[in-house]
Structure formats: structure tokens, C-alpha cells
Image (tube, rainbow, N blue to C red; front, side, top):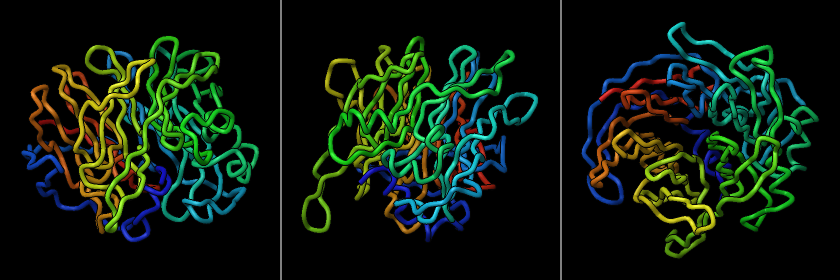
Length: 371
């Protein structure tokens, strides 16, 4: 199962639930100490906020809002059900002056409960790079019209300054790349998710394609790594489980690190963080997590892991959590009881910024978490 199945599972029964009361939980690797953190809401009323990214100097925080679709064209989507396209996606900036939408009218498709649009954002210099989700193949996307074909399943770019500020340019069509290349094999399925813009290349974790891609400034796409399926126990037998990579960052040693959500059956403790060296097979760096949606590294090398569901997406009430892994391997839960968090970023003093309620059309928020 791909990321699409992950989000479909259980959404209809939990979408209207409020934020749950925090409670200490454990991972598959044993008890984890809980650190009670101060949590402050710094932005609210967002439409399905997902990934976060700081601008230069970490003075401006950018948020990808997936939006709530629109008036159509409409079609039956395998994840969203009856869904309609619209230009309700956005990139929003948070700084000392407040909260402001800086890139508007971005493609979005949504059903009754959730949608797909801008998934993640990364700022390099004056360029804002962001992914837009799609889930599926070019034929599925085409059912939502020409604007959907030109905007969903892409790596897109805008600028923070100058006369082109707010304008959007298409860098690469990653759904089409998946259709042409399909690096992991199997059904054609692309859902561009995590993004990291650095220098001449922008890296994209494609959650549907199960691959890490690199995109040049001119739109050339190459495969950096493919992540393996695993055989897991389920229902008294064993079944294959997709990795579903959702996030990519630079970490210790300058290597790339990728976190995986995992596909069905979303086992507790089944998600991993991989270290990726180009030309080599992905290496397991840390494991024992559940349904990773984002990761980040602190100044001291500590790994911060955001789990969209610490108790599994198959739980009756999934609860998100932030886990800190110190360089010596010690773990603690920094915050839990989150409701479908979608993104994580670290500030200048390693304070955490997390999007919460990432499937909420009007009630999404950004939290600042200090220890």
C-alpha cells in the first residue's frame, strides 16, 4: 500500500475528533521518557498545513497548505472518493510581522475529508521550492482537468523577492517521470512529498514511487535511491509492506537522511530513518518509529522524528508525537497527542515548529514547541 492508503485508513471515523489529551506512549524499542514541553500556537485557521521550511537566517518560516480543492473538474479519486479540483493551495509565511500568504492559487484536489495540494516547502536563497501531491498516474490526474495536469504531482518554484515574487514556475513533472521511469517497479504511482533545496539540486522524497529523486534547476530528474519493500507479520501470516518515504534532510556528515511512513499494515515500531549516500544502497540509520511524516537534526546531532501516528494509523484514534533521539541513542517524547501533524522544522535555538491538524480544511495550525 502507498501513502494514499495510509491517509485513507480511518479518516472517516476520526476527522471530527478534537486534539487528544497527551499521554506517555512507548515505541517498539522499549519505554521512552516523556518530556513535557511548552506548546504555543503561532498560526491558526490554515487549510491542511503540511510541510515547513525556514528561509535564510531562519527569520521566516514557510508553510505548505494543501487546500480544500474547489468547484472542479470533479472525478472519483481512489483515495479521496468524489473529489474536485480548485486553486485553494498556498504557501504561507510566518515572521515577526505576522502570517501572510505569499504564493496563492495553487492546485488542490479534495474530497469530503482531506485533499492533496502543496505538500512540503524548502527555501534556498530567494527561491521557494515546493512539492504538490497527486497520488496515482497521469491518466488519473488528467481526469481533474488541464490545470491539475500542470500543477499537481510537480516540483514547483517561486521567489521570495523581486518582480517575480509570488509567481509560480514548473520545474519538473514527477508524475510523468514516474510513468516514464518507474524506478521501484510495480504499479505507476507518484506522490511527491518531502523536499530539500540545496545548491544545484533539489531532492524530493516521492512517497508513491518509493524513491528519492534529485531535480536540477532546469528540470532534469535523476534517481538517487530506491527504498525496499519489507515482509511483515499480519493476520497470522506475512505480507509485503511498502516503505513510503515522506521526508528528506541533510544530517551529520552531510549525508541525506530519509524517513518512511510505511504502508499497510502500519506496524507500531516499523518505520525507519535511512542514511543515503549517492551510488550506495540506503542504510538504516535509526528504527523503531511509527508512521514518520517528517524528521530534522538539531545542532548537537540529535534526531527529531515527527510521527503522524505514534500508535499507528490503524489505531481507532491515531495520535501524533515528536520523538528526540540523542546522539547516544537515548530517546524521549517531546510532545504527543498531536492530531495528524504534517511537518517539522527547527529554529535557531532548536525550538520545534510543527504543523497540526494537517487534514483540517480551516482549523490547521502551526505550533512552537520549547523544551
